[in-house]
Length: 484
Ligand code: BG6
Image 1 (cartoon, rainbow, N blue to C red):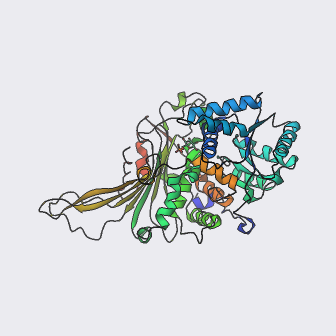
Image 2 (image 1 turned 135 degrees about the vertical axis):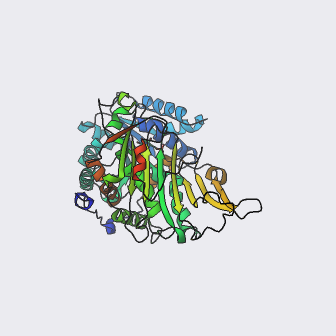
Image 3 (image 1 turned 90 degrees about the horizontal axis):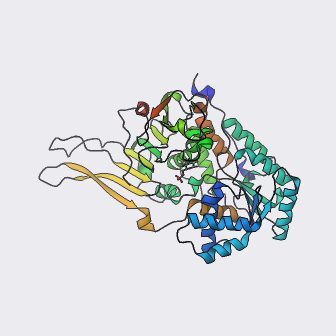
């Protein structure tokens, strides 16, 4: 069957209904306040916001656990101390003064009435309801908020994964839209909150140097790698229910590709940016399973929480194509995986050879192609691999790197969650994912979810199964990622 017949339809969204600028919130309600995400990311992010003076709201946890507000404050205190280096105790105290707790079961009506009273106590008119809870609970929590009329008094932030496939994402959107309008649904993809990922936009559209070559006439291939050294440490049960394609490919990776591939937005408003992303996914062919290799690291099946004989992938490599005027014919190679040799989130734009090689008097191997490497992970920055004259009497060229390390050049930047929480409180949709874009990403990966094919074993610390080479065309090879 061809991809065209298996691919879900394109999604549409009524953009006229979307107001990209919502009023500033006066309370933050954390569902899942005692969970892992809150501990690792949200409390540290709140700490930083408090530290910079940007936090000016009550933070209300909702938790099923049998905790008092003081237990909750102690938990937040501990989380911050464990995740923020040299945390300032006076800042933690100031943050803890903002914390309050609604304790109760989500199924009980009293929990929702208590939440309402709590918001009244804090004179809240516009709350951010942050769902740091399993996605299966999103609809229930949204409905319960509506049952006490709190949906008119705030907006929701939902964590990924947004759905399990195209159909469930559409369904979830429908359910949430029956309660909240699109512009009150903030879908988090923390990659959109990373400075280095956002810099892709600035890099492309604030530098005249690049735009003329950023297309099929000059670009030979694009490679995107998201590799992690760790396996699924401690998250076996969650991970085994998703796999690499749902965990990072459908969301983080495709969002990065949208920024790399899109046309310049018509203006600065977030809607224009979302429009261009949606167009990329409309022009992208849904995954071709013949150009997809799934792998699983040896030892994954012994991880706690993983089902016996599981066929879930911890690695995926795919060749994508974008049938647009800018990109038709350019292969986009993408690989993601756990337990790989090195941590990296890196893009390599490979440019075409010059029409004639003039500088090869010594008759050595042909010079390497120009590469633009965008490092989007911890060591973020950019490297241009260029040719320069080899010293000596001959006219030969050799590769030199022109490299910028962003932390050194620009200083330390905010963490993704800090920025996203602040955006949600300020009411800015810019760094969140719109319905049609999310559905568009599921449309791309759906064939892989339906029929991902064989799973290939690979060893921890490798670059995945060697079969990943089979998706490369035109004698291409995977470029090694930048050393750390
Ligand atoms: C999460 C995935 O969304 O992103 C994890 O669930 C993954 O499996 C993580 O490790 C990677 O994020 P970062 O910011 O560390 O690159």
